[in-house]
Image 1 (spheres, rainbow, N blue to C red):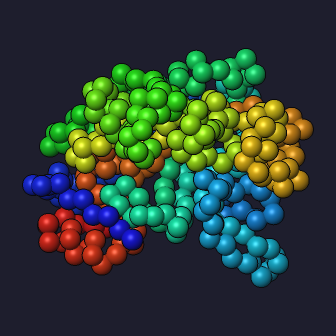
Image 2 (cartoon, rainbow, N blue to C red):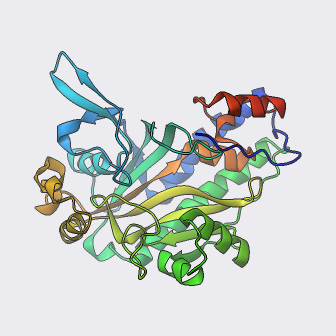
Length: 340
C-alpha cells in the first residue's frame, strides 16, 4: 500500500544532473562532519549475518528479515535490518577504546514497511555509528550532548551545500528542543493521535524546528508505548529520535534514531518486559549479560532522508532508487516529478 502526497505547486529544486551531484555532495561531506563531531573512524560493515548469531536487529519486534541459505556453508543468513548489535561487537573485535568509535554505511531491506509514503520505502540506507563510553557517561546529559553534536554536523553540511547549490532554499535550525515521550503523551492525552501526529503537532504548536524526542520503547503512564524499540540494544530510558521540521511536507521528519546501549541490567530488565527471555541464550545477548562487551552508545542516520530534507525534495524516491506502486509512479509523472 502507498500513500501519495504531492504538495500543491511543488517542483523539484534541482534538475536531474544537479540532483545527483547534490546527493553525492551530502554523502561525501556529512560523514566528515560526523566523524569530527563524535571522533569516529570508518569501518566496513556486513550486508547479512547468520540467523543463529543474534546480531540482527528486529526493530519493533514484528518485522521479518529477508533470509536465504548459503549452500556452500549450510548456513541460514539474514539481510541486516540495522547494525545496532553488530557495531558493538565490532568495537570489541577492532580494539576501540572509550572516547572513540566507528561509523559505516548500512544498507537494508525492510519489505514489510507499510505504508510506503513520502518517507518510507523497502530500501533503507543509513550512516550507522557507535562509540565506546564509560559507565559514568551513561547519562541523559551525554545523550543530549551527542544529539546536539549530530545536529551540528547536519547543519554544517547543509550550509556548505547551499554555497555549492545556491538554488537550494531549505532552512534548518541548530537549536534543539528536548522533550520526552511522556511529556508528549501528557500534552495530547485523549486526542487519539498517533506517535507521528504527536510529534508533528508538538513541533507545529511550539515552533520548534529541531527536536530530540527521548525515552522511546518503554510503557508510558497510559500503559501504551510511544513507539516500538527492540529490547536488546537501546536502553529505553536513555535513547531518542532527532526530528527536523520539513517545510515541504509540513510535518516532523525523523532523521535519526540513537541511544545509549543496554548494559547487563537494562538488557535483563527489558528482555523480561518484552517477553523475549528466549534471546538470553544467543551469543550476543550472553556477552552483554556477562559484561563481555564494551559500554556503548550509537545510532543510525538516514542517508536518503537527509538528502531529501537538505535539498528540499518531497518524496524519498527522488533521492534513492527503490520500487514503488504504479499509482505512485503515475501520480509523480503527472506532476512532472522524477522518481529514481
